[in-house]
Length: 487
Image 1 (cartoon, rainbow, N blue to C red):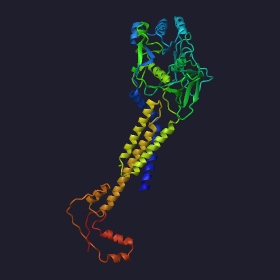
Image 2: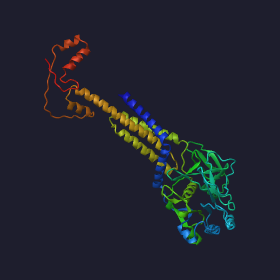
Image 3: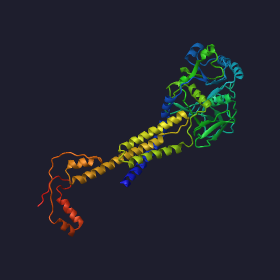
């Protein structure tokens, strides 16, 4: 019996592993996408709602377009916006706006940028077949070459050469197949030069950092890659194997204070609100085409990506998958199989139908652990692979155990029905083992029969022949309910 159960467990694990590998190979990124979407749910459920005042959003919204005029505004108007923010006490200005193409009034904006250095934006294209590039990228890191870890740009829309300075960062997101933005390349390569993201440049400018260092994670708890500064003021930024920053949707969009650009230009900002704060200037106006999908909204302003990344960088809470995550997932899969083996061994305590339910519950537990670490520790462990493997193994084990149980029950019924009426045999075969006494009153007829000199006959004949005689003498033939006559 033990060997039969052991064989069922081994076969179930083998079939579960085969099913997992088949699904993995046929569905491609289905499991990672499942993890990402479940992570979106965790962000929505656990997002903090607080009054974030370190980073203030200045939004070029529909109100701004109505009061100031259609976009693009004259460079003189943009210069006045920067002056107004500086006058209100903004410590740093980050422009999530690409100031492309030279304009006649660039001189005024350039003069203001020299007085109030701001982080400007440029955008790269990562898809093949991109149209012609515009301008010339600026703000490259002082690396001798761009590491192959980072993606290569196929085109770009750069800041106008008359405005481009050292403080320029890219605002290129990675758009997932379902349309949501969950990652952003930390660095993008173009002509073997390295161009950092807008959030990184903002953090460098805010901490006084002049250069970045890329290195492998030192321990299993570290991310695969770490991007750190040359001084202690710049916090280490965790990157995944593709060199991307996983966007931490830790703050609910309502946590950020958003001011209309029109109110800033009209000096209608509450006194002291911007004093010492970082200001992120972007757009939510529909006509400016800076709309993305986030875990919170299907159509949100693109500046939310940079706001989430910047605040998480300041707090040191960029989520990342540690290098030791595969080992963790393997251990969780082994523990899940051990649980199923224990339940299969303790068959009297755990009915067979509980095995698949336990496997499904184990997947929920893994998702819960993943979500807890995602929110509390900014660690992305992953859960879908071990959950799928244990789930398939548990389902297979439940089916095989049920089939084996049915075979044993049918065999028992066949044996009992050779000597007992069919209803009695069926009742005994279907009844679970129990120490309880079940008694009832029945009207029955009992026939006692004997074979003369049978003991002497058995002493003189082989046991097989004696057993055959007894079988023929039985009141019921195997598989028949017809009584036999005895003479």
